[in-house]
Image (cartoon, one colour):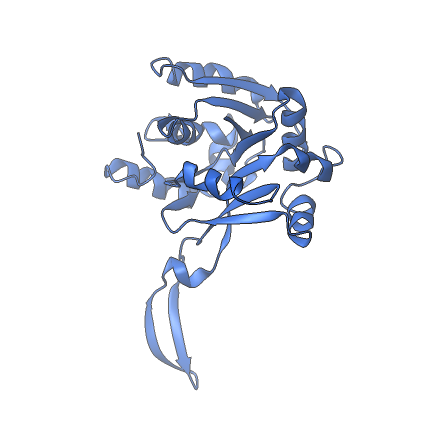
Length: 236
């Protein structure tokens, strides 16, 4: 099954690393983060990719060719979906270009040890047009329990205390493009909210590792985990 990767954003929150390259090419352990993402899919049997490029799109193909030179049967194509196209518009362009009926989709800046076959099974056994992966966000702050302005407990917050958020690993059916009018549509706003209202949006609950790379701090955290040889997303 084809995997669409959204890789066209400006990466402004990681501007320290994205002045001269697109965010998906920012490296963790000497490899672009999009390489880590694609290898996670590849190791689970999904070897075909369509990459929705935008910002510095011309850098994606030659860089990935260099990093995938020794990986057999992996196929990818980069589609220039426009510099200012929003995420919904990029997905719509990919569906129209490829003609696919169902696919995986994810962003080019987050890693996880998600079981993709389980995600697909959840989708296939439902009537939903989209199934997203719900994850617990990383705990960032100490947890304080108060009683009459007195701290009675202080400790590290667990990820499970944070509730569920969209982890960015999807299965999409082609009909989703009916909810995307043009390039200006953000997938995370109108389409997903409309699908939720019409009971066409499902969720696969992932209790394992998930980490975005939105900031320099998060990039450095991922780099440190990789250097220790304990990267949970390394499934190959």
